[in-house]
Image (cartoon, rainbow, N blue to C red; front, top):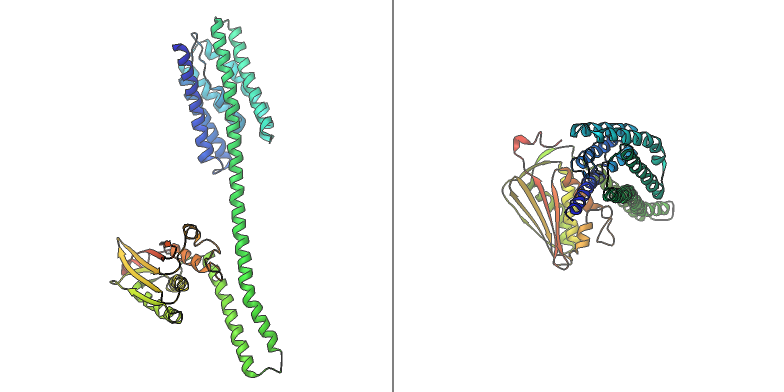
Length: 430
């Protein structure tokens, strides 16, 4: 009973070594490196698995060690190629020689050299196979041939094995066949899942591109259609000069709207900070207030600004204005009359914090999570570009934009940007 428990422990330990190493490879390495590096990693992982398996063997009779080294030897050669197989054979025999120079060593030379020759013939076919069942069948056949070869060599070496010993070996290698089946199945399914995930990521990218293209087309077409209509009306010689001037004014406004949409898109696509200045945030926010106050007054919204001591950051003035105006404008539009927009400026631990709060309708968790993604807007007439551009600009300034919101209670945007001193502004940002 004790011997059976020991055999089971060796069986589980060998499988654990192999599974853990190949799991790490397929989870964190495969698909992230070049083809050559991939073969090298397969070789390293297979070699380590072989060494660990051989370090914890069964030895039912003197001179012979039994373990599951055959599994990583076959897997490494089939997936890594002939060169990897040759390296694994060298590692296996060298370690077996270090353990003991006995009959078992010579048996290993015969069995694993024959196995490598057979695997060298089968590897090209295995790599061309696309059907999982065919790969499983080939791997199991190779494993079975290896087991038969080993048992045949034992027979010709006239090893004195009892009936129980033969039964133990047969059971041990029968379990090895099951283990090989499970490992190949795991590896192939892991590869398939990796391919599917890559395809999903590519499809998501294409979907984003498609959404952006569709939205840009839709948003730009509207002002262009209006402009086209007014220009056609201008061809009518019977209309008055006053109406012509009115149509021209509306056409120019629509063209400016189209230009703003395209500018927002370009800012999102390439949110780089180029013209870097030392900006004092109290002064910049005061400028923003001058811009948005008429719009807030028109919608009967109060604005309050909480100042602090001089706070300096390095950035591009125009783009910072664009980000702050977009967020403030969104807050104003989210509120009904008599709403209140609060802008608060603080500094803490070398970071400037600009807090923009409104008392509007607020958002749920799903809306907050999607905020800033391409062309998502909580407004029926919005494109989502404004908030997306704000996120991009703050990120380009090495800052962070966080959002807190509750339905019916309002939304708070917190912009966190690194502080700088006067002498640091020339080299802080690239």
